[in-house]
Image (cartoon, rainbow, N blue to C red; front, side, top):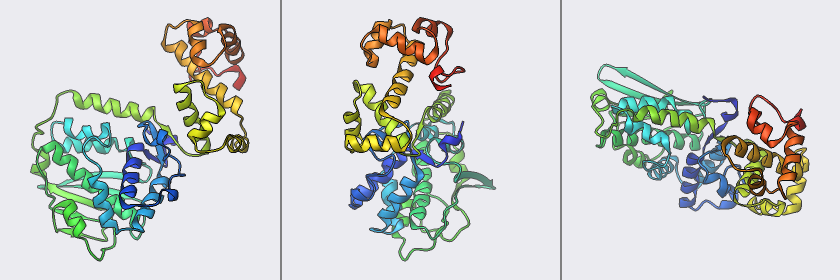
Length: 355
Protein backbone atom coordinates (compact mmCIF):
# COMPACT_ATOMS: atom_id res chain seq x y z
CA UNK A 1 0.00 0.00 0.00
CA UNK A 2 1.30 3.45 -0.91
CA UNK A 3 1.43 5.77 2.11
CA UNK A 4 1.71 9.52 2.26
CA UNK A 5 5.30 9.06 3.45
CA UNK A 6 6.29 7.54 0.09
CA UNK A 7 5.23 10.59 -1.88
CA UNK A 8 8.12 12.39 -3.51
CA UNK A 9 10.50 9.43 -3.23
CA UNK A 10 11.88 6.69 -5.46
CA UNK A 11 13.75 3.45 -4.88
CA UNK A 12 17.46 3.42 -4.18
CA UNK A 13 17.77 1.24 -7.31
CA UNK A 14 16.67 4.17 -9.47
CA UNK A 15 18.97 6.50 -7.55
CA UNK A 16 21.87 4.14 -8.27
CA UNK A 17 20.93 4.13 -11.94
CA UNK A 18 21.14 7.92 -12.06
CA UNK A 19 24.38 8.07 -10.09
CA UNK A 20 26.04 5.45 -12.28
CA UNK A 21 25.07 7.37 -15.41
CA UNK A 22 26.43 10.60 -13.91
CA UNK A 23 29.71 8.88 -13.03
CA UNK A 24 30.00 7.45 -16.55
CA UNK A 25 29.66 10.95 -17.95
CA UNK A 26 32.19 12.39 -15.52
CA UNK A 27 29.73 14.66 -13.70
CA UNK A 28 31.68 16.15 -10.75
CA UNK A 29 30.53 14.47 -7.55
CA UNK A 30 30.51 17.73 -5.60
CA UNK A 31 27.39 18.63 -7.56
CA UNK A 32 25.32 15.79 -6.10
CA UNK A 33 27.22 13.91 -3.34
CA UNK A 34 25.54 16.03 -0.66
CA UNK A 35 22.00 15.20 -1.81
CA UNK A 36 19.67 13.11 0.32
CA UNK A 37 19.82 9.43 -0.55
CA UNK A 38 23.29 9.49 -2.14
CA UNK A 39 25.32 8.50 0.93
CA UNK A 40 26.70 4.94 0.54
CA UNK A 41 24.57 3.54 3.36
CA UNK A 42 21.41 4.80 1.61
CA UNK A 43 22.40 4.17 -1.99
CA UNK A 44 23.31 0.58 -1.14
CA UNK A 45 20.21 -0.12 0.95
CA UNK A 46 17.28 -1.37 -1.14
CA UNK A 47 14.85 -0.33 1.59
CA UNK A 48 15.85 3.33 1.40
CA UNK A 49 13.91 5.64 -0.90
CA UNK A 50 15.67 8.76 -2.10
CA UNK A 51 13.82 12.01 -2.80
CA UNK A 52 12.72 12.43 -6.42
CA UNK A 53 14.38 15.86 -6.21
CA UNK A 54 17.71 14.04 -5.91
CA UNK A 55 17.08 12.27 -9.23
CA UNK A 56 15.97 15.50 -10.87
CA UNK A 57 19.16 17.28 -9.85
CA UNK A 58 21.44 14.46 -11.02
CA UNK A 59 19.85 14.19 -14.47
CA UNK A 60 19.99 17.98 -14.79
CA UNK A 61 23.72 17.84 -14.19
CA UNK A 62 24.04 14.98 -16.67
CA UNK A 63 22.14 16.77 -19.45
CA UNK A 64 24.60 19.64 -19.13
CA UNK A 65 27.23 17.21 -20.49
CA UNK A 66 25.22 15.23 -23.05
CA UNK A 67 21.92 15.30 -24.93
CA UNK A 68 18.85 13.77 -23.34
CA UNK A 69 18.62 10.98 -25.97
CA UNK A 70 22.21 9.95 -25.21
CA UNK A 71 21.48 10.07 -21.47
CA UNK A 72 18.36 7.92 -21.93
CA UNK A 73 20.44 5.33 -23.81
CA UNK A 74 23.17 5.39 -21.16
CA UNK A 75 20.70 4.90 -18.31
CA UNK A 76 18.86 2.09 -20.09
CA UNK A 77 22.15 0.30 -20.77
CA UNK A 78 22.93 0.58 -17.06
CA UNK A 79 19.67 -1.12 -16.04
CA UNK A 80 20.09 -4.84 -16.78
CA UNK A 81 17.57 -7.42 -15.65
CA UNK A 82 17.49 -7.58 -11.85
CA UNK A 83 18.91 -4.11 -11.27
CA UNK A 84 15.48 -2.83 -10.19
CA UNK A 85 14.90 -5.61 -7.71
CA UNK A 86 11.70 -7.60 -7.33
CA UNK A 87 9.88 -5.26 -9.74
CA UNK A 88 11.94 -6.66 -12.64
CA UNK A 89 10.92 -10.25 -11.93
CA UNK A 90 7.23 -9.45 -12.01
CA UNK A 91 7.66 -9.37 -15.80
CA UNK A 92 9.28 -12.76 -16.21
CA UNK A 93 7.26 -14.80 -13.72
CA UNK A 94 3.82 -14.08 -15.24
CA UNK A 95 2.12 -16.39 -17.78
CA UNK A 96 2.53 -13.83 -20.59
CA UNK A 97 4.58 -10.67 -21.09
CA UNK A 98 1.36 -8.64 -21.03
CA UNK A 99 0.34 -10.02 -17.65
CA UNK A 100 3.85 -9.32 -16.38
CA UNK A 101 3.55 -5.73 -17.59
CA UNK A 102 0.21 -5.40 -15.80
CA UNK A 103 1.78 -6.68 -12.56
CA UNK A 104 4.70 -4.27 -12.92
CA UNK A 105 2.36 -1.34 -13.63
CA UNK A 106 0.26 -2.20 -10.58
CA UNK A 107 3.40 -2.15 -8.41
CA UNK A 108 5.10 0.87 -9.97
CA UNK A 109 5.23 2.45 -6.50
CA UNK A 110 7.92 -0.09 -5.61
CA UNK A 111 10.39 1.92 -7.67
CA UNK A 112 8.79 5.27 -8.57
CA UNK A 113 6.64 8.09 -7.19
CA UNK A 114 3.10 7.26 -8.27
CA UNK A 115 1.83 10.69 -7.25
CA UNK A 116 3.54 12.05 -10.38
CA UNK A 117 4.04 8.98 -12.58
CA UNK A 118 1.52 6.46 -13.85
CA UNK A 119 1.35 3.64 -16.40
CA UNK A 120 -1.66 2.89 -18.58
CA UNK A 121 -2.03 -0.18 -20.80
CA UNK A 122 -4.57 -0.09 -23.62
CA UNK A 123 -5.49 -2.61 -26.30
CA UNK A 124 -6.78 -1.58 -29.71
CA UNK A 125 -7.40 -4.44 -32.08
CA UNK A 126 -4.10 -6.16 -32.71
CA UNK A 127 -2.00 -3.54 -30.89
CA UNK A 128 -1.16 -2.88 -27.24
CA UNK A 129 0.12 0.50 -26.09
CA UNK A 130 1.96 1.13 -22.84
CA UNK A 131 1.82 4.80 -21.86
CA UNK A 132 3.89 6.40 -19.10
CA UNK A 133 2.51 9.72 -17.91
CA UNK A 134 4.55 12.24 -15.95
CA UNK A 135 3.76 15.77 -14.81
CA UNK A 136 7.06 17.21 -16.04
CA UNK A 137 7.14 19.77 -18.83
CA UNK A 138 8.27 18.40 -22.21
CA UNK A 139 10.96 21.11 -22.34
CA UNK A 140 12.68 19.67 -19.26
CA UNK A 141 15.52 17.68 -20.81
CA UNK A 142 16.19 15.60 -17.71
CA UNK A 143 12.56 14.49 -17.58
CA UNK A 144 12.67 13.67 -21.28
CA UNK A 145 15.64 11.37 -20.68
CA UNK A 146 13.93 9.62 -17.76
CA UNK A 147 10.69 9.05 -19.70
CA UNK A 148 12.54 7.76 -22.76
CA UNK A 149 14.54 5.42 -20.54
CA UNK A 150 11.36 4.19 -18.80
CA UNK A 151 9.83 3.07 -22.10
CA UNK A 152 13.06 1.33 -23.05
CA UNK A 153 13.13 -0.51 -19.73
CA UNK A 154 9.56 -1.73 -20.30
CA UNK A 155 10.58 -2.90 -23.78
CA UNK A 156 13.60 -4.80 -22.47
CA UNK A 157 11.74 -6.41 -19.57
CA UNK A 158 8.99 -7.53 -21.94
CA UNK A 159 11.70 -8.98 -24.18
CA UNK A 160 13.14 -10.82 -21.18
CA UNK A 161 9.70 -12.28 -20.50
CA UNK A 162 9.24 -13.29 -24.15
CA UNK A 163 12.85 -14.53 -24.39
CA UNK A 164 13.36 -12.66 -27.63
CA UNK A 165 13.84 -9.11 -28.86
CA UNK A 166 10.56 -7.24 -29.20
CA UNK A 167 10.57 -4.40 -31.72
CA UNK A 168 7.84 -1.82 -31.14
CA UNK A 169 5.45 -0.73 -33.87
CA UNK A 170 6.03 2.86 -32.82
CA UNK A 171 7.28 5.05 -30.00
CA UNK A 172 5.77 8.42 -29.04
CA UNK A 173 7.60 10.75 -26.68
CA UNK A 174 6.30 13.71 -24.69
CA UNK A 175 9.41 15.65 -25.61
CA UNK A 176 10.52 18.18 -28.14
CA UNK A 177 12.28 16.67 -31.13
CA UNK A 178 16.04 16.74 -30.51
CA UNK A 179 18.49 17.82 -33.18
CA UNK A 180 19.70 14.26 -33.49
CA UNK A 181 18.04 11.11 -32.28
CA UNK A 182 20.26 8.27 -33.45
CA UNK A 183 20.61 7.28 -29.79
CA UNK A 184 16.86 6.77 -29.60
CA UNK A 185 16.88 4.59 -32.71
CA UNK A 186 19.52 2.42 -31.04
CA UNK A 187 17.55 2.48 -27.81
CA UNK A 188 14.28 1.16 -29.27
CA UNK A 189 15.47 -0.61 -32.40
CA UNK A 190 13.09 1.36 -34.64
CA UNK A 191 13.00 4.61 -36.58
CA UNK A 192 9.28 5.05 -36.01
CA UNK A 193 9.62 7.58 -33.21
CA UNK A 194 7.33 10.58 -32.77
CA UNK A 195 7.75 13.64 -30.57
CA UNK A 196 5.65 16.22 -28.72
CA UNK A 197 3.02 13.61 -27.87
CA UNK A 198 0.65 14.26 -24.94
CA UNK A 199 2.02 11.17 -23.17
CA UNK A 200 5.08 9.03 -23.78
CA UNK A 201 4.12 5.59 -25.04
CA UNK A 202 5.37 2.48 -26.80
CA UNK A 203 3.18 0.20 -28.95
CA UNK A 204 3.62 -3.51 -29.71
CA UNK A 205 1.76 -6.20 -31.61
CA UNK A 206 -0.76 -7.76 -29.24
CA UNK A 207 0.33 -11.22 -30.40
CA UNK A 208 3.88 -10.53 -29.15
CA UNK A 209 2.72 -9.65 -25.63
CA UNK A 210 0.04 -12.32 -25.33
CA UNK A 211 2.19 -15.28 -26.29
CA UNK A 212 3.07 -17.64 -23.40
CA UNK A 213 6.20 -16.57 -21.52
CA UNK A 214 8.85 -19.35 -21.68
CA UNK A 215 10.13 -18.63 -18.17
CA UNK A 216 6.74 -18.29 -16.46
CA UNK A 217 6.54 -20.12 -13.13
CA UNK A 218 3.06 -20.98 -11.80
CA UNK A 219 2.43 -19.43 -8.41
CA UNK A 220 5.59 -17.31 -8.39
CA UNK A 221 3.81 -14.17 -9.56
CA UNK A 222 1.64 -14.09 -6.44
CA UNK A 223 4.69 -14.55 -4.22
CA UNK A 224 6.53 -11.71 -5.97
CA UNK A 225 3.53 -9.40 -5.77
CA UNK A 226 3.36 -9.93 -2.01
CA UNK A 227 7.10 -9.40 -1.74
CA UNK A 228 6.81 -6.14 -3.69
CA UNK A 229 4.08 -4.93 -1.34
CA UNK A 230 6.11 -5.89 1.73
CA UNK A 231 9.19 -4.16 0.34
CA UNK A 232 7.26 -0.94 -0.14
CA UNK A 233 5.63 -1.18 3.29
CA UNK A 234 9.00 -1.61 5.04
CA UNK A 235 10.87 1.01 2.99
CA UNK A 236 12.46 4.10 4.54
CA UNK A 237 11.54 7.33 2.72
CA UNK A 238 14.24 9.98 3.07
CA UNK A 239 12.56 13.36 3.09
CA UNK A 240 14.83 15.55 5.18
CA UNK A 241 18.10 15.78 7.07
CA UNK A 242 16.68 14.16 10.19
CA UNK A 243 15.68 11.10 8.13
CA UNK A 244 19.24 10.99 6.84
CA UNK A 245 20.69 11.15 10.35
CA UNK A 246 18.36 8.49 11.74
CA UNK A 247 19.19 5.97 9.04
CA UNK A 248 22.91 6.64 9.56
CA UNK A 249 22.47 6.14 13.32
CA UNK A 250 20.54 2.91 12.78
CA UNK A 251 23.20 1.55 10.41
CA UNK A 252 26.01 2.28 12.91
CA UNK A 253 23.90 0.75 15.70
CA UNK A 254 23.57 -2.45 13.65
CA UNK A 255 27.35 -2.72 13.44
CA UNK A 256 28.50 -1.66 16.91
CA UNK A 257 27.69 0.58 19.86
CA UNK A 258 27.08 3.94 18.16
CA UNK A 259 29.00 7.05 19.15
CA UNK A 260 28.40 10.58 17.99
CA UNK A 261 31.82 10.81 16.24
CA UNK A 262 31.17 7.51 14.42
CA UNK A 263 27.81 8.70 13.08
CA UNK A 264 29.31 12.08 12.19
CA UNK A 265 32.00 10.32 10.14
CA UNK A 266 29.33 8.24 8.40
CA UNK A 267 27.61 11.50 7.38
CA UNK A 268 30.86 13.28 6.43
CA UNK A 269 30.36 15.86 9.19
CA UNK A 270 32.32 16.96 12.23
CA UNK A 271 30.91 15.93 15.61
CA UNK A 272 30.30 19.59 16.46
CA UNK A 273 28.40 20.21 13.22
CA UNK A 274 26.28 17.12 13.83
CA UNK A 275 25.35 18.36 17.31
CA UNK A 276 24.41 21.76 15.88
CA UNK A 277 22.23 20.13 13.20
CA UNK A 278 20.43 18.08 15.84
CA UNK A 279 19.76 21.24 17.85
CA UNK A 280 18.42 22.90 14.71
CA UNK A 281 15.93 20.01 14.41
CA UNK A 282 14.82 20.34 18.06
CA UNK A 283 16.39 17.05 19.18
CA UNK A 284 19.56 15.79 20.85
CA UNK A 285 22.05 12.96 20.43
CA UNK A 286 20.88 11.40 23.71
CA UNK A 287 17.22 11.45 22.67
CA UNK A 288 17.93 9.96 19.22
CA UNK A 289 20.24 7.27 20.62
CA UNK A 290 17.63 6.25 23.18
CA UNK A 291 14.96 6.09 20.46
CA UNK A 292 16.99 3.71 18.27
CA UNK A 293 17.90 1.59 21.29
CA UNK A 294 14.25 1.47 22.34
CA UNK A 295 13.17 0.31 18.88
CA UNK A 296 15.95 -2.31 18.83
CA UNK A 297 15.18 -3.65 22.30
CA UNK A 298 11.46 -3.80 21.63
CA UNK A 299 12.07 -5.75 18.44
CA UNK A 300 14.37 -8.21 20.24
CA UNK A 301 11.77 -8.74 22.95
CA UNK A 302 9.09 -9.24 20.32
CA UNK A 303 10.90 -11.54 17.93
CA UNK A 304 13.50 -13.48 19.99
CA UNK A 305 13.81 -15.54 23.16
CA UNK A 306 17.07 -13.86 24.15
CA UNK A 307 17.58 -13.30 27.86
CA UNK A 308 17.62 -9.80 29.35
CA UNK A 309 21.40 -9.88 29.89
CA UNK A 310 21.97 -10.76 26.22
CA UNK A 311 19.62 -8.04 25.00
CA UNK A 312 21.32 -5.50 27.26
CA UNK A 313 24.71 -6.45 25.82
CA UNK A 314 23.43 -6.18 22.26
CA UNK A 315 21.83 -2.79 22.90
CA UNK A 316 24.68 -0.93 24.56
CA UNK A 317 23.45 -1.08 28.16
CA UNK A 318 25.89 -1.85 30.96
CA UNK A 319 23.80 -4.68 32.42
CA UNK A 320 20.30 -6.10 32.76
CA UNK A 321 19.50 -3.69 35.59
CA UNK A 322 20.10 -0.65 33.37
CA UNK A 323 17.95 -2.20 30.66
CA UNK A 324 15.09 -2.89 33.10
CA UNK A 325 15.18 0.73 34.27
CA UNK A 326 15.00 1.94 30.67
CA UNK A 327 12.04 -0.30 29.79
CA UNK A 328 10.25 0.80 32.98
CA UNK A 329 10.79 4.44 31.98
CA UNK A 330 9.55 3.89 28.41
CA UNK A 331 6.60 1.58 28.98
CA UNK A 332 5.86 1.53 32.70
CA UNK A 333 6.51 -2.20 32.88
CA UNK A 334 9.35 -4.75 32.97
CA UNK A 335 10.98 -6.42 29.95
CA UNK A 336 9.22 -9.65 30.90
CA UNK A 337 5.91 -7.82 31.16
CA UNK A 338 6.46 -6.13 27.81
CA UNK A 339 7.27 -9.47 26.19
CA UNK A 340 4.27 -11.12 27.84
CA UNK A 341 1.61 -8.52 27.08
CA UNK A 342 2.88 -7.50 23.64
CA UNK A 343 2.88 -3.79 24.48
CA UNK A 344 5.32 -2.99 21.70
CA UNK A 345 6.75 0.24 20.38
CA UNK A 346 5.13 0.84 17.00
CA UNK A 347 2.00 -1.09 18.02
CA UNK A 348 -1.12 0.09 19.73
CA UNK A 349 0.69 1.39 22.82
CA UNK A 350 3.04 4.32 22.98
CA UNK A 351 6.03 4.52 25.34
CA UNK A 352 5.10 6.56 28.42
CA UNK A 353 8.07 8.82 27.78
CA UNK A 354 6.42 9.89 24.48
CA UNK A 355 2.98 10.64 25.94
